Image 1 (tube, rainbow, N blue to C red):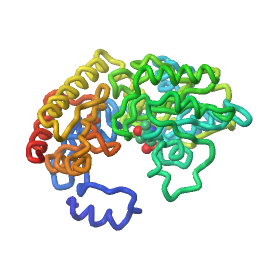
Image 2: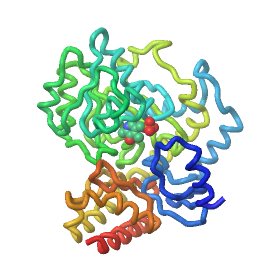
Image 3: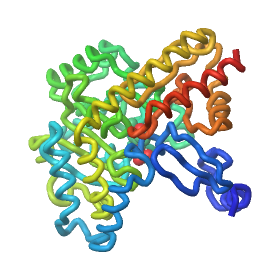
Image 4: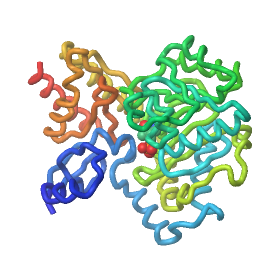
Length: 398
Ligand SMILES: *Cc1c(COP(=O)(O)O)cnc(C)c1O
């Protein structure tokens, strides 16, 4: 089947929830993808921060195949080796003492919301999140998402969520009441337009949590797992959360989510409080073990930082050459955004489409930033290819 034949079939089968590019991707290796017509793409999205070790990383594939031939699934009524191994790696390399495993980012945030409410106790159920945030599409996670466009048509939203304007600590403090149990935020907003929180802002949020005995929840679904150049983004902010959620890159493409927390907070859940049929599946966790071990291996994260700096410098150069189109870059490690000028934000999607025509996958986030999330194994030569393509597109646009 070629692209046209597959798209013809596909477009009749699915509920129309995605506006998809007119390609059927059939294989991937490293930072390259191939479509059903044999055309190659350079991937600067990595499944939206998922395939961080690159497509079909041999060690991940090997671990998956081996585990699939050993034990595919048992209920969480029983212990398994890969799940325990992955949880051990996460605990030993983070602030956390205990882990809950599920299957996606939204599910990890649901678990965090439930845990924060249970920990808060009678009458303390309200969660403050930030405007421009993204926390997933399930009903509670989407309610926590501080963007009205994701709520539209699904009202009434569940009770107990309020939103603080981004960057305004005084406004946030005013939202704290006797009902508040937690503050939820991404250390760097991904969907919101590659927007990092200032270190001082995050430190002040931590202080408010301590002062009012609130839990601080970091959603590191997108920025965790090496993306920013440290295993977790919070390490670079110098602020430690009480709960952290992970998903996307944790198993390099297999579905997984995880909630990490301290012993004291974990104690609020007891047998029966929360559960997942598939969460912590042995095959998925076997992949996760390879991901964590690879990222902690010699020099991997230093290289992410160095290549992130390289990409940031390339984007800054482009912004300098085309000041009418781009204001500048922002990001951390290998999550980088090129911020468009007010005049050109309406062309964001066109620019992404032009990149697609040039064989490069990227996207437009928060209606402001061209967002680049390559596999963390991206080479400097591949970053150069992106820069050349962007330069050409901007030259034609200017
Ligand atoms: C993608 C994302 C989610 C949702 O994850 P799903 O696996 O799609 O449910 C939640 N939070 C952040 C920050 C994300 O980037």
